[in-house]
Image (cartoon, rainbow, N blue to C red):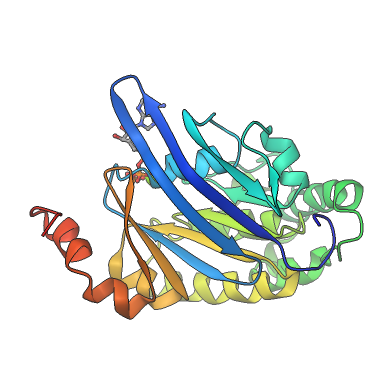
Length: 248
Ligand SMILES: Nc1ncnc2c1ncn2[C@@H]1O[C@H](COP(=O)(O)OP(=O)(O)OP(=O)(O)O)[C@@H](O)[C@H]1O
Ligand SMILES: [Mg+2]
């Protein structure tokens, strides 16, 4: 059941999204359980963001369905999916610039207190600390540098007490060392709130370094699912990344 701390699952079957002639997501099957750390890998334009947009209710699927804990939620609005525990961050930041760091996180916590009934609500100050933002807690979000803005976005998402945290390129624009630190923070925060994580990235080395299991996308379809080792050894993944024929 949604709203408690028991195990929860998102199951996606045959999901497609077309924009006119262009099929951005083409018949994707996907399954993730609470507590798992999943990566979505794929080159530019592979359909990663569109897939996440569909399962967070931002765009309607053209075909297929997805469910949370067995309930079909294919037609459900974003805010309602968030109340059921699917929370995302964006490839481009969307913070409340005029509010302080602490206020940004507290807004999420208030929402969680109203809508994540029966779920443990994370302590906002603890999340701010885990995100490495304690010394910045009273600054306006608009004053933060890029790395701190991304970390605030993560803390704010975690404060919603999600069952699943969907992160779209959370480390884009960060240095390698900042990226590694960010991933530790994601893992730590996900464990704190008991959430499953789905992370999108297009960097093969990065995503294989952080994920328990990976879905590799190319041209709207899932071309491989497996552990990081299996994905790196997969000829179709290698072909997609080398730009040669992907059906070897
Ligand atoms: N709103 C839209 N209208 C028309 N086409 C779109 C729309 N959104 C995405 N697309 C197209 O769908 C395809 C998949 O795009 P998507 O943004 O999902 O890829 P992505 O894997 O997230 O890529 P990136 O790594 O660059 O973020 C692309 O060809 C893109 O141009
Ligand atoms: Mg994208």
